[in-house]
Length: 205
Picture 1 (cartoon, rainbow, N blue to C red):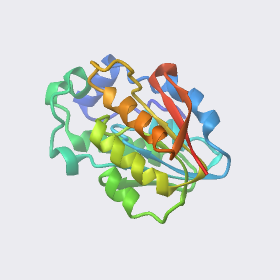
Picture 2 (cartoon, helix red, strand yellow):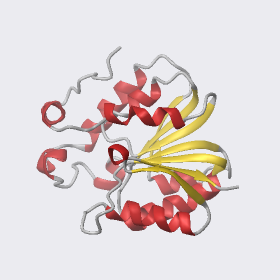
Picture 3 (tube, helix red, strand yellow):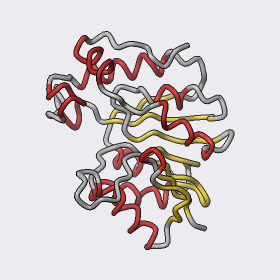
Picture 4 (cartoon, rainbow, N blue to C red):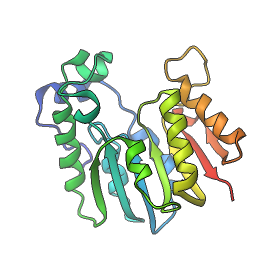
């Protein structure tokens, strides 16, 4: 079964043909996910990386969390080619992600429509073994997510994430800034950063 379950929406179909989403380049992160674990992906978009996580048999349960229309309404903002300059609908991205994840014939694959912080706040403390964080990429939101994850991830659990940019002038530098602050607080230790723009933290005891 191919991860490339092509979207039905023509705008998203053309977008995925032209824009490189780096989904395959992130597969090296799978070595950090422990067998029999419970985890989540925060930030799904159209599910190109989600379906690869969903297909990992060593994951016992994973929840795919994204706000889609709850955050952006009917259409995404103009993020350049990534959202077809504002022509991509949130329902089209959700439909593609839903179809991709549903095609995986493994139990414990769930989708939650909502904001990552609200979803994390609803969990019992220390109920997750790992999380892949790929949500807003903004400093404030990432800081709040990491503060919640310091409680929701089990001791020695793993937080993986996208968009590591050490350059302060980069639009997504806030991710690296928030990660460094979480490490300085004593909640996490860095175990990897920078490879393929990914990063990984381990929760301290």
